[in-house]
Amino acid sequence: MNIAQWLARTAQITPDRPALHLGTQVLANYGAFHEAALRIAAGLIAQGVAPGDRVALFMKNVPDYLIAEYGAWYAGAAIVPINGKLHPREAAWIIENAGAKLGFATPDLAVVLGEHTSAKVIEIGSDPWQSLLATPPADQIIFRAPDDLAWLFYTSGTTGRPKGVKMTHRMLMTMSDCYQSDCDLVRAEDSILYSAPISHGAGIYNMMHMRAGARHVFPPSGGFDEGEVLDLAAHFGSAHMFMAPTMVQRLTRYAKTLGRDGNGLRTIVYAGGPMYNADIIEAVDHFGPVFAQIYGQGECPMGITALSRHDVTDRSHPRWRERLGSVGRAQSAVEVRIADDEGRDLPNGEVGEILVRGDIVMPGYWQNPEASAKTLVDGWLWTGDMGAMDVDGYVTLKDRSRDMIISGGTNIYPREVEEALLEHPDVAEVAVLGRAHPEWGEDVIAFVVTNTDVDAAALDAHCLARIARFKRPKAYFFVSDLPKNNYGKVLKTSLREKLAASS
Image (cartoon, rainbow, N blue to C red; front, side, top):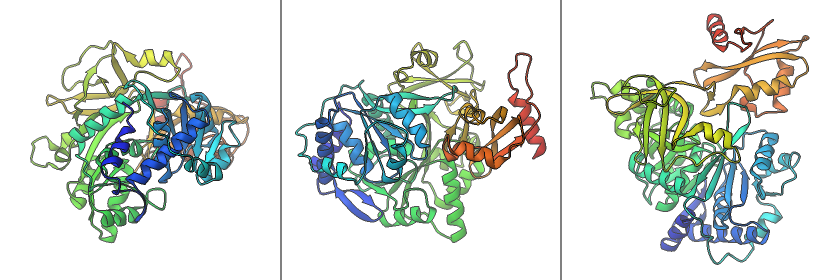
């Protein structure tokens, strides 16, 4: 079944229920939303979009995002959401790799994207967009099988090049069901606030809210503003949100400083990076029992483990602190185990790689059989994350087997930044790693060996021309050489020790 049927069914049952909001303003009810998506679908089909084709979404958080998304699904296409914070050159690479038939972009992104790709890009609000909305609506939603591609999610890999994770309609439906059973029950009176990037976790949670007939609220700022979030939650009530840990920290700090409570907040699901116990304890003490945690990755979206609202709030269990520091227990539709390098189960408490299988796990990477075979073994997804499981099934992350940096809930892979820096003619060697940061979790720093004198400002400008702003190093350490082992591999452990000694 095409997952977009959930919008159609809600529109059939409650067409007058408010659906899309910009701030407190109602832009469309479910009936109008459904009709707009049907018009987009008809327009896409008229332009040659066929079932299985990919449609890219390089957009900021705006209500038209969901119209474009569901219009593409209605046409039988798969969507390719692209983080609006990416450099247009990076977005263009994703569009080309996905073989996208066309793309939608918000005005601020459409202009710069057109400089980097020959693919057809339709600017939201432009005459071509209005022409699509003026197309007579399609008379049906194109059928898609459960294992057909629905969402092609690009996540960086250890090679520095993004990999496309194939998400099927079955995966998204199962993930939505797990949310209802393991995280929170969505009701028609609820509202979902899109303050985190809709191309990622925040957006992937739209579907269960669509099925319930909840309100979809887009902040006028287009992003995360603490005061705006609290104002909107108070206005709508029963607000649901996805937040990275740094957003939870910022919201708590803001609310405490200004003496504001969390009136209207019902559920905040946090994920995407390490949440320290002190921070979540402070947040719960101020806002109350509104928090739940999930652990997932693009390859198993939002669907590996969950730490329930009760577990986040409970202070009576003798091991409540250990549980609070965990990422919870396996979600309903998956199996999770801890294994050694040979795939053998490890006893409770021992650290190994986290493996997961189930209907939320991807079938593989887009046009990358080598990476798929390495990551999916005998039906099990090797997550690349290290952890331990206790006797009650709670999983605690211990380390990452890859060198991924998580800054503000966003994954940054050192190799990608290193490759960008090495394009500078005066950079001979470079090693990038994460450094602990009190607000962002980690920030990016670079150890650089240069051929001639070059300053940090020049390297910063060089990076900004090649990669997204949030990926660029926040500090540069100029060194005469990089420590290496006998095989010539850079010893990042030594660099981390050096960094710790200097702080």
